[in-house]
Length: 248
Image (tube, rainbow, N blue to C red):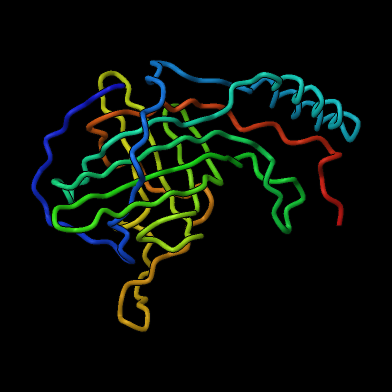
């Protein structure tokens, strides 16, 4: 487990909309120690598909078969680990995240889509907790539904399945960056400082939170000061073969 330290500047404590500040998840043992260079590329498989597509319908089928063959045993994109972050507006609070997610491309069919899901389909869990002195600890557990990676950074979304502060079914976004060259890991979360509708309030005059789309999350703005995360990158999976396309 990697441990890093950050000197937190004093700041004003901000409580986000809908009690969002009281977020976060039970603390679970951290995942494997981050590798210095964990990456995978399916570029050759994608190129095979593209070449087949240019060759026409028969070529598309052949290209898809080659792409699938090229991905057999391929590394999946994933994010694992557990860590405590430094949040600038609550520097004295204990805020922890645990993430265990992996990509499962084209496994979540959606109405209106011709393919059996998206290349960013994912599964796993996110847990988080937020403890403040004199205030009950807020916690949530959520199911991952989307993830996309780029180098040592990942964005993912998850929907709440159990919580003492959030509504079940609410989707939120996270970003995770594995540190390189001595830099700390970083994490960003999509509440309290983002996802508000401009110039809109509810019947009680409170700010209205925006709906969070799949894989949508802010940049990883908060440094991890204890624990750490592993981000394994994988290129987008090749498109499924013609037989997977829905008709009508």
